[in-house]
Length: 447
Ligand SMILES: Cc1cc2nc3c(=O)[nH]c(=O)nc-3n(C[C@H](O)[C@H](O)[C@H](O)COP(=O)(O)OP(=O)(O)OC[C@H]3O[C@@H](n4cnc5c(N)ncnc54)[C@H](O)[C@@H]3O)c2cc1C
Image (cartoon, rainbow, N blue to C red; front, side, top):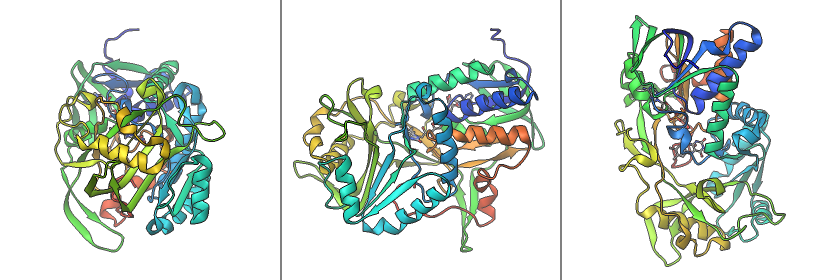
């Protein structure tokens, strides 16, 4: 294939992560299927290659546990896409279980109702039922502190390597023209319209640009002429002025080996992804050391892919960096943003508190590079919207590996020219119009 960058294209997609690749693939499919164009009308650019950003290092959890209710429909579309080719995407539909204390009961009930209304089946268990449900999956689960549980049936996890390969393959199959090692360095604009995408290998005139550069988004935002502060109006009328448009957080994750097939359900199945937040419970290591400033927040999923042997992968609440961060080198290559020294002790303490099978697991913590950073939006909820007359931005606020369906919805919007109901709550106008999201009962920015 000719690897000379074209001088123009109908669609230029910037970033070959989850969203760029899913959008490019769905755009190409829509153009081919409707006869309104060809897959080759779509040009996909990445300065490095597929999965070079957060998509390549994500934990891979696919769940729908959000207090931001409009996300529930986004996840339903996303699981549809994951399930359209689970083998090639590495998607394991094992379900998802989240566990909380009594202070979260009302939230769980509300989330469950909204998920089911969005056609995303889940069950909520409270009190004794919650405890016995957990014991049915993990007989050695310590249920002392657990009062409420949600079980999402369609959720699961997907290994990042398989998903990246699978998405790249879909793009190729539908004729997307991909160019890697090509860095976007700016946008030539007339007023609010992008005329050309400026790259390290020349300019590409574009009818439409999809901006999906993950943690690099703040640079593209500035190149597109936007400021770094924003006023946020909430539904109760109060306004928070001059808030940072983008805030970087760094993620803390790790892996623990297990002996043989120690992480299975009693009926020998891969267990659901597990997530536990106990806001009133301290974390204490097996030898009695407490983390005074931290509460219990942990997640885990089976992960042979990452550790190359039976094991689990997971993490805890990310740590805020601020409006500026050193994005390069990214992910595991960064010396600045690896999990802190305390993380292994903390994480293993949460595991051994939860299940007897994890007692002593600190010795099996895999000492390796981990983590990555993300650019979060002002309310920590995605922004999917036009950022120039012909440039559409996918800013997932760093919780969107799971959101494979966003590309499908965006492609639908771009090719039909019609509003897509599921995307509309995530517009930029929400900040000015008093619809800033703010429903939180968690210390984590992802809820
Ligand atoms: C450690 C970690 C664990 C995570 N775990 C989960 C999880 O379990 N579940 C979940 O749902 N989410 C998870 N996330 C979040 C999720 O990975 C991201 O939200 C998602 O992958 C972002 O996808 P993206 O396509 O927007 O960006 P990215 O995957 O970052 O892709 C952006 C691409 O754009 C390219 N790019 C950037 N700038 C330019 C430029 N100027 N020119 C050309 N190319 C450019 C980059 O090279 C990159 O390949 C995790 C994130 C991290 C860091």
